[in-house]
Image 1 (spheres, rainbow, N blue to C red):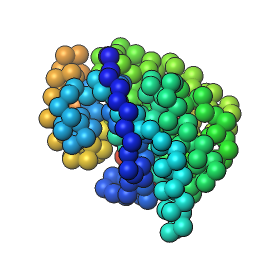
Image 2: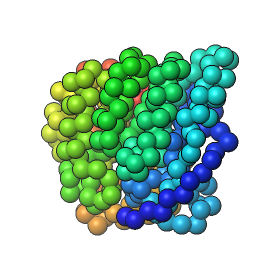
Image 3: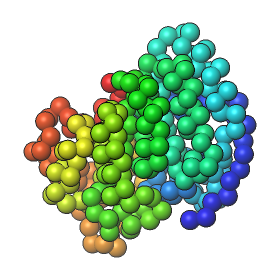
Image 4: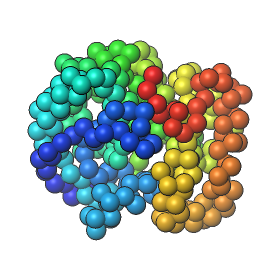
Length: 273
């Protein structure tokens, strides 16, 4: 999908953690908009998207001077107490434009200088492997959460044709694990997958988060229903996977392979530490 790029000079970067992210003091988004344009993305139904009046994925705002702004805001926030950051809540910090603009990398450089108490990085992009040097500098203060909604590439192509291939994400998890970067896999939203899915992850991560539209879109599934996502399931005759109880099958599969305390559901799986 072709995207238009716009340069913006934001007044703030750190936003108060609320709602689903209430376990964090702040959320941080290096960009506005996301060229991965996942069909089910709940941000499509949020004001940041609906007010834009352009198709989600066709526009990206690049936040200029972000590092200088974060340096000021981070020092101020740390002077008031504990700082835990979720990056990112409404965009992917490693979407393709990051190759060129390096906004996310510049923010990590600031956080190496002024470390928060904890940084959670949510992405589906292999590009996160580029920043292993900075991630290692943050030691146990960081966790990289790699979204892998399914182990079936045919399903991935149907629901998220513009997102990175599954194998590339698995290889990046291996790279991060070999380097010693704290990681987890986030199966969110869970899509139809095989019984072998847990075995493909057991050697790569020791923490799994499972979430779905009904637990995790911030509206009990309403935002997702408004997107008409159920029709994508019906097209493949997998409608049973679009159900509030479907997560239980995947949860049980992972519990048979991973220790119980390593398989977490929804908000608990995104929480710090």
